Length: 273
Image (cartoon, rainbow, N blue to C red; front, side, top):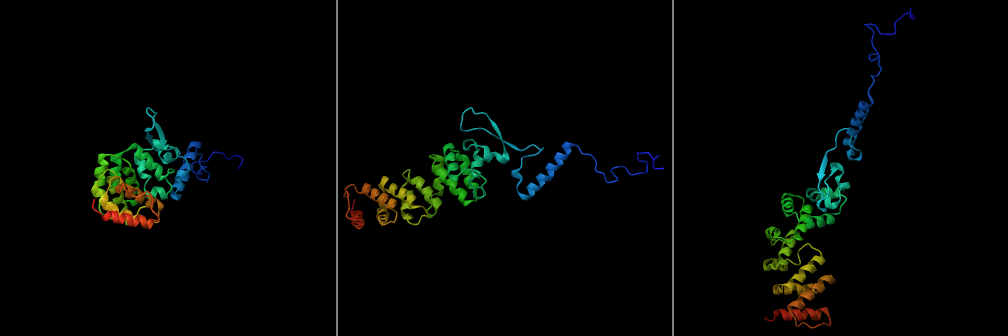
């Protein structure tokens, strides 16, 4: 009786799908399903950036070159923009974000912080820099932004620096007062002289400040300059001596020893002008 049985299933007989056979799936649907599985796994393991975007369209960021006038607009995938953009083409917001400690430690940016600072100082986006500084709670990012603002000569930056130029012996207060002292502020010169040996700055930066005392003939800083002649840093010693020579034009060309120079300037500083 088997030979006479029809090959098609009867009304009560299970079909191929019910017998455990897999339904046929088109190639496109199979590839989409495979992508979803792989993409989900990569997202869970934090490696999503290692695979290209699949059938879904990748979010894109339009970037206009600020370095070349008339340059065409380009579109760069958002996830890969740090790898494909030139520094001169990167948006200001992105450059500011890359100065955060999370971006630096996470290696999310291939540019050094100093290169980013140079680029921001060249562009002078003062409003964006001031806003980012006020909103940031990252001390390192605020320090980087302050350094950028320090390089920009602007009345707006000067007003900002006056708010930050406190008598606190902190790094931020130091650079704010330094900015104003370079523009002849007696108040800032006095604060720098008073806190000179307590600021957490390098000897190279301290030497630059010592030069300011001579540039502006700031006599109240004479005791500070004399003390710098005993400094371990040769740069600081030389800067202090150069400023003292400006304050005392009749200074001998040479001294037998550093102690002789110290005694000379201590005596000269006590004499009336």
